[in-house]
Image (cartoon, rainbow, N blue to C red; front, side, top):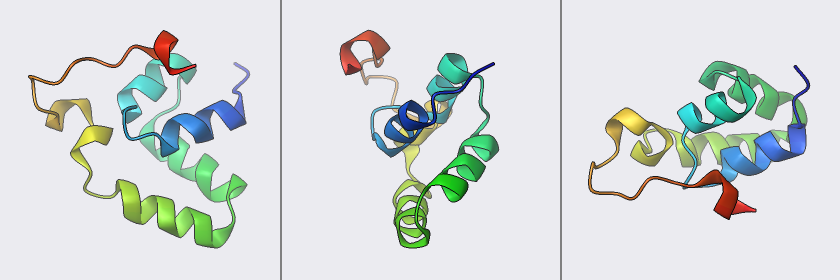
Length: 77
């Protein structure tokens, strides 16, 4: 499966996209996304991204509030 790295990076930086959504779109697990980000971002950018997503409930569907509207991938682009 060919993964569009730029698209994965864009989705990973987005607050509205969960790791589960990235998995459904590109077939990458959370750990694979982290490895991809580590390989393709500058060291400082990766550290900022990890600090940003660590502990963030929006990046995990199970931790989200049920009242939030689901994200539509088609409307993102």
